[in-house]
Amino acid sequence: MNDQITRRLSLPISNDGILDLHVGDPILLSGVIITGRDAVHKWLFDTFINKTRLPEGDDLKVYNAMKSILDGGVLYHCGPVVSRLDNGEYQFIAAGPTTSMREEPYQAEIMRNFNLKGVIGKGGMGAKTLAACHEVPAVYFHAVGGAAALIAETVKSVLSVHKLEFGAPEAIWVIEVIDFPVVVTMDAHGFSLHAEVRARSRDMLEKLIKS
Image (cartoon, rainbow, N blue to C red; front, side):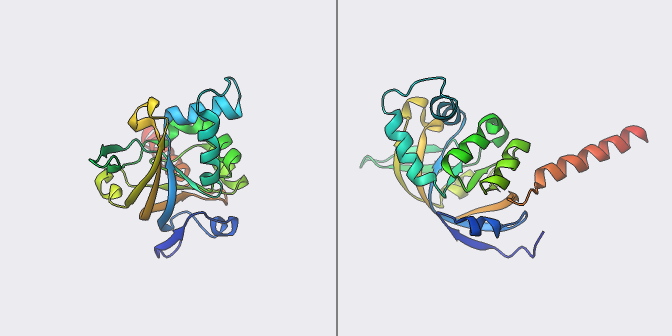
C-alpha cells in the first residue's frame, strides 16, 4: 500500500490514469457515472454479450447511450432511494453500495464490452473480475457501506434514468457526482485486497482448527 494521500480523479479516466492506481489508494471521484445492479447486468449480458435474447423496445437506444458514458467511465453497484420533486426532477436520498459479488458472473465481460475503467461497489469481486481489471485495464473501487445518505450528498444531479420498468432500485440512473469517496481495493496490477483478506482469514481458521 501507499502513503494514503487522497487523490481527486475526474471521469472519464485514461488507461494511464488507471495504471497509476494501486490497492489502498483513497480517491474522490467526480463526473458522470451510471448505476446498475442485478437486473441491469443480466439484461446487458443476455441481450448484447451472450445474445440469448433479441433487443426489444428501447434496448438499443439505452445501450448506445450507456456506451458513450461507460467508455472510460464507471459503473456503480447501487440501488438508490430516489425522490421525485414537484418540478419532475429526481433527487437521490440514499445511494449506498450493493454487494458486488452478485455481479461476478457478468462483470468481466461487461467491463470488456464497454471499456469500463472502474466498478464501484461493496465487498469486492472474484478472480474473473480481477483478470478483467488487468486486461482492460480497470480497477474496483470500494464504497463505504452504511453511508448511503452521505454518499447521496455527492450526487449533484440526476441527468437521466432508463429501464424504470426494472423498478427504481434496479433502474439505470445516470448521475453527476462530485468528490464521491472510494478506495481502490482491486487494481490493474493483479492485486486484490479482498482476496488477501480472505486468504488471511482462511489461514487463521486453519490454525485455530489445528490448535
